[in-house]
Image 1: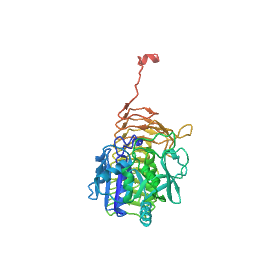
Image 2: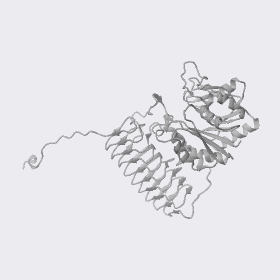
Image 3: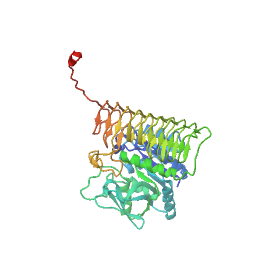
Image 4: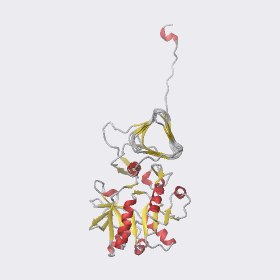
Length: 458
C-alpha cells in the first residue's frame, strides 16, 4: 500500500477557542503542527502518494506541510463528514487501496505499521485501529463492538456500553469504494431516540459493508493515541508525545554550534538545535528539546520532558513545569511560571503564572495569574456547543485563543476560555468564558474629596 489520505477539512468547532483561527490539524504538538507529524510518520512508513482533503482555513494546512511534491490536495467545499471528504478523492482519481487517517489524531507509527501488516496478510476488505473504551464514556465517541478481532457492529455515540471506540484510522481495499460512495449521508447505526447530524460518516459505510457480509478486521491500539477533539486533548497529546519521543532517545544530541555552560545543572538528555545557548545557573530537571537560536539563561528552571522552540528567550528565574511545550519566537522572563502548552510568539513576563494552553501571538501582562485549584476541590464543568463536558484531565486549566492580551494583575479562574482577538483589562477577575473579539475591563467608580494639612489640625 503506497497511498494515504489525510482528512483535514473539518471546522473542529469543539476545539474553540483555537479552531476559529486555526485548522485543528495545524494545532501544535511539542511545537510541530499535528499534520506535519502525521505526514512525517507516513513517509517513514513508505507512503509515496499522500493526499490531503482540505476545507476550513485550507491555506494554513498547505503552509504547515510546505511545498511537498508527494502531497496532493482535494477541496471539500461542503463539510459533509468523513465519508464525504473521502468521496472528493474518489471523484478526482482512480483510487484503489489506501490508508485513511483523520487529521486530528496523534498515533504511533508502530500501530499504523501493525495495521498495514495485518491488512496485507489477511487481504482484508478493511482493517481499522480501535481503542478499548476502559473508563471513557461511549456517548462521547463513534464506537464499535469487537468480537474475535472483527468489528461486529458500529454504534454512533451510544448510551450503553461498547467495547471499543473507532480511531479514524483504517486501511481500505479497492472494494470499499462502493460503500463510501453510497453512504446515506446520515448515521443510521444508532440507538432509538438519538439525534445524528446529517453528515456522511465513514463509520456508517463500515456498518453498511458489515450488513452486506463484508468483514472489517479490528486491531487494538498498543502505542500512543490521542483523538484531539477538545482543548484539553491538546495537553494530553502534548504530554504523551513528549513521553513517547524521549523514551526513544538514547543520549544527548548537542551540535558543535551550541553551548551548554558547565555551571548549568543538567539532569536529563538534551536534544538541541543549532546555536542554542544554555547559560550558568540554569537547572534542567529532565529531558529537553530545544530549537535553533534559543537562549536559556540566568536561573531558568526547566521541568522534566519539556520542549522549547526556535528563537526563544527563557531566562531570569522563570520556571517551566514538567511536560511543558513552548512554541517558536516566545519570551518567558523574570519569574514567570508556565505549565502546559504555548504556541508561537507568546510573551510571558514579570511575576505571572499560567497553567493551560495559550494561542499564537498572545501577550500576558505583568502579574497575570491563573488559578487551577477550586475552593471546592472539584473539576470545572465545561460547556461546548450547548453540551456539558467533563474532562478526565486538565479541566481546571485555562485556554486562551490566538491574538489576545491581558493587562496587569488579571486573575483567570479555573477552566475559563478566552476567544481569539480579545483583550482583558487591568485588574479584571475572569470567572466565565469570554467570547471572541471582546474587550473586557473594569468600569471604575472614584470618590474625591478635599484633603490637606487642615485634616491634621494645622
